[in-house]
Amino acid sequence: MIDIPIKNLKPAPWNSNVMDDRMIDRLKESIMRYGCLTNLVVRPLIDRDYEVIGGNWRLKVLSEMGIDTIPCAVVGIDDAQARLLSLALNRIEGEDDLGLKAEALKKVLEDISQEDVLELLPETAQSLQALASIGQVEMATYLQNWQQAQSARLHHAQFQLTKAQSEVVEEALKSVLPKIDKSEADSPNMRGTALYFICKSFIDKEVTHHG
Image: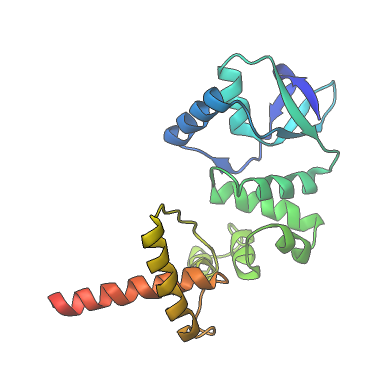
C-alpha cells in the first residue's frame, strides 16, 4: 500500500463502470463524511504513472475535492487480468455499461478461460456467452440469449424491519422454503426465491379479489 500523487493516477479507458449524478453525489458525501474508506487498486505504467483498475469514480471525486495523494493498492498484472479484476470490482458500486463490459469480456476471454472468469464474476456461462456475443451475432439472437440469462442474475434488496416484523418474515420464509421446487427456482438464493413466491401469491390473490 503506497500513497500516490493524484496527478500520476490515470483512469482506465476501458472501465465499464458507470454512475449517474445522484450516485456520484452520494459517493462524494460519503467521502467527505468518512474519508476514502476503500483504497484504489492500481497497476504501474511507465514514467511513474499508474492505471486505476478499481476506484475510477473515487479518483474523479477526490480529484474534484483537490486531494493531492491517494492511498493505493498496487498490483502487477497484465491487460487481461486487469480487465477481469476491474469487472469483479465493479460489483461493489455503480453499474456496468453493457457495451463496455462486453468489449472488456471479449478481451479477457482471449487470454483467460471461461472457467477462470466464471470463478470470479457473478455471471453464469449463459450470460457470459450473451455478453461476449454483442456485435458478433444478430441483435435478435443476442436479445434471446440475454433474456434467458437474466433469470440467473441476482438483484440485491435491503429492508429495515422491527424485531416483530423480522420474526413474521422469518416464519413466512420457513413455511415456504420446503415447498419450493428447486427445478423451478431461478436463483441460487433460496430465501430470495421464497420471498418472491410469497409476494407473487399475495399479488395473485389481490388480482383475483379485485377481478
